[in-house]
Image (cartoon, rainbow over all chains, first blue to last red; front, side, top):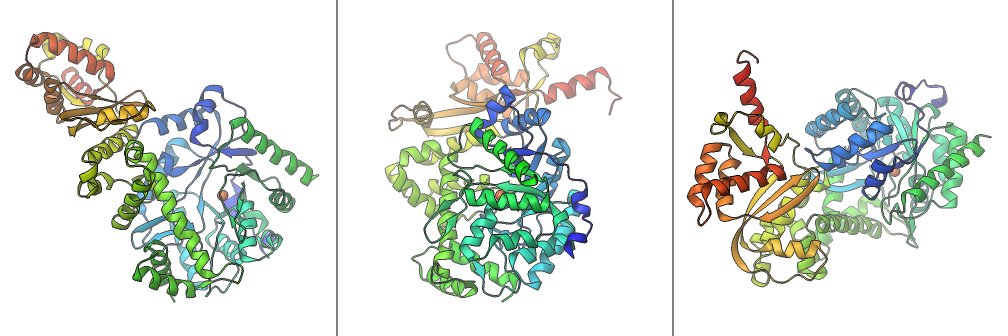
Length: 283
Length: 278
Ligand SMILES: [Fe+2]
């Protein structure tokens, strides 16, 4: 049923190719040497500042590369009122830098006016579904464009959940008409932590909705996997990525690396590996 | 349980200190709202978030207060961070604001018995971070100034740049931060009243101790003041040096450093040239 649905949200999203998350240790190298890279993803909040170096850096990057905004504090699933001030400054940043799209996470980050600065999973119930769908519509209205919502990695699930995360994500995207940023590593991490088959997750996501992939490394803590973005991508995650490429096609792919950040050239090599693997997967 | 209650419960379970009675209570209720298994019980799953919450905020505070955290050392800084976060839990969407009450928190803390200068040092750390991302605004430089007729100078209104701060200190905390920035051993600072100027030139942030007369003049300029008023202030406060020379020398330095803002100058020129315009 989902495969046939026409996705309005994804229709305008360009295929950007293979990019990496822009991180501080690489700012000067990218600005001065302009290494080849299809595109960069930046953390929106890092640039939602009054002035100074961050905005100057983004200006320089934007002159040469396509850029996508990736937020971490939209808190789409919170029961607190939507932060209109936050959205307004995000919208004005977007007007200035014209990102190819704006994404954030399908999660909540705080409640009662307090912030946990973390991406927490939601209880996947009808109540939550109605709540999130309504908020996505409001956010898209304020931003004047569809957003992409990313599946988070998680360590607990709610006892009152009545549907799976993949059903919840797919239904939110369909009903709110937003796109999906599918984080392949997050699916793998959550699958291990919650004992489900990651391939089932991928097969349940509607094809026309996926506008971007994330790939990253995680760390093994024995009883659970932690989404640390500080390791190379594991072979099992690459395999899952290949499955996703076969299902969703040549979707824009991004490498995330947030800790123990390697040299830029090594990061670029990982983006190239994604390019190779996608090419092979597509035959 | 409704979504709102669930979120409040999980929030309390994650943030309430582990050892407290409340912490244990919230946790046991939160655990029942969650699903766990033998491999990873609900309690342990919740704890992953509790640990991440503190560690994330700790590393943010460490980054924003590099000199303060170095001076206090890991164990002391961690304990203070824990207590600070409990008193001032983050409320803003961006984690960059998490440490905004930290200097005032230290000012009322018993840590001052052992490190009497540390609240001022934290304020300096904070000012450096603030100035780094303060609003952009055109600076007044020597060329801009020279374009003006000399008779226009006295009434010219000058203002310190929005990307600058003046800090009144009891201790020479600039010496401590300087030593730590240079990765050299730091010493307890001398107790001496100083005024620190933190400013941005191009994209880099600097700070220095101001001369007494200079700080008086810049304080006047921080509210926006006519050039003649700034000169008078300098002349009144200055001893030993010829006032005209002092003004020349300091103005030259302010213009070179980009400490003064240009906005009022533009407005004035627009007004004198074409009064009808907007
Ligand atoms: Fe991700």
